[in-house]
Image (cartoon, rainbow, N blue to C red; front, side, top):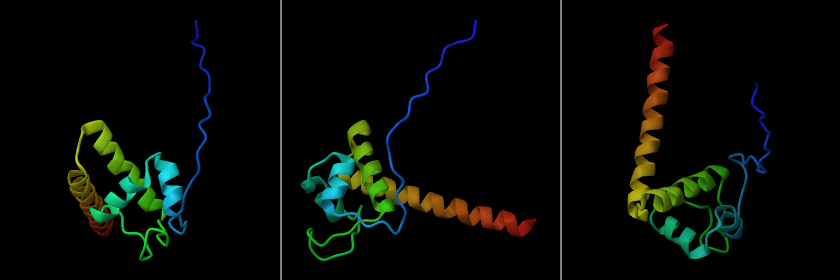
Length: 108
């Protein structure tokens, strides 16, 4: 007997690096209040363009960073400083992997 599977479609959208999001849009996408996004900016997790929260513009990549930081905080009970450190280490790991892959390509 073959199992019956149902295909579930999940709503979503793809954000490119050129996408500019306001503070309100990031808050809605992350389902958090603005003060939490401001804290992420103060911790250095996010670096928006603009001088004031009203002028801030975030990229799709920064939205992803915010979501990862918030998930670290909620799932693993990591404070924002710890989430900032974890993201920094993940960035470094990604850079090292890219460098290693470049070396591997050069060796062929």
